[in-house]
Image (cartoon, rainbow, N blue to C red; front, side, top):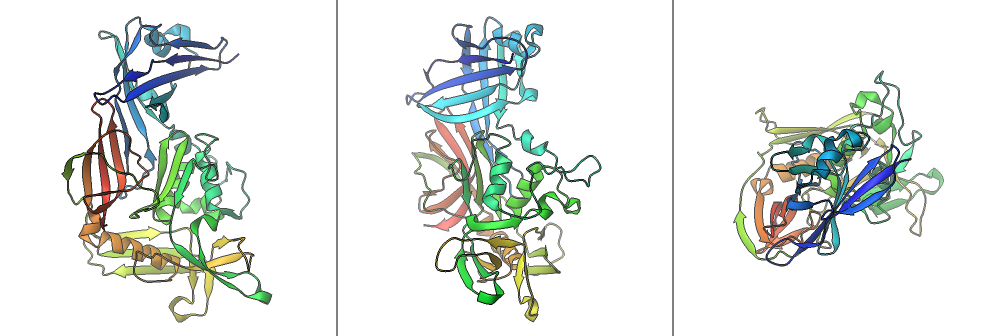
Length: 433
């Protein structure tokens, strides 16, 4: 019979400002045994360092963002040594679930990375790093060993599905509780979409369809091996890059899919005393962007002038796509649709144009909007600016934007030091308030 071993620390003051923290570890086994719960004090275990919480994104690599937490424990009687390395607990999973509570609220949930465990026998201490088990995404394959037979991990048909449902299914590989409707998955993308109703007998146009109403074709995501996607993690990264977003997990039960270079005035936080500011330009400039769509016909969209200088151009080959009267030709195509329920004209609509109020160009084809977006934000040195703000306090949220001294910022990196009661925030500079 499967069993668990739970270790709870006491609630302790972690810095001079009186912030408190508590940590819980839950080891699991499929072997025979009974559940057991102990205080860490009973097993002569003490927190040596409350460590750091960290999130980081680099949009040139476009990797998923895993929230990580580092912890160090003294293990004076060797109980943790036996759990991690003892033969008596060989059946115990070493990827224990770790929950950090700060000031009475859950701040982080994650599992121990097996390859991060380091036990110092002389010091009687163990340290490790936790993450939200993002390997569950990167190791879930979408094609069989022949590289062509779809495994269809979510049981889809080759049809259209709400993008929010696609994201729910992906993140629920980490934890079944994550959902957009439930509020544990944040989705922020503010483009406006223009569509026609799929009913030749009663033609209607609908403007200002929003991203969370969109349905994307599953075929290129999960049923077409020529697209180069091999795991569910690849699918999530591709969705994020195609929609000019970044994605990841704050912890194992809180996920996000958030547009880049976007200041969300409805979701902000206030900084405490700012201890230092370091201004800098992190990303090189782009002179030319090329975005390719293949929806019925292959169309290449461009913005800027190709200087043929290495690393001064950007290419995007997008899976979602739509176009309307491309280059004067009376044709249109789309693999993005919506079924808005709002009156007076409900029904099935296909998306043919979109716009971004912060990017010049107006209503355009999908590929052109992608090209316009990246050119706008990567051709201007000010938009390549990433500032580091070091602020007093630990009660900050990676998903909330902020202002500092009249400047607008979107966090793309954050490191919270519990003991020092400071937070370092790397943030995209988005202009003046």
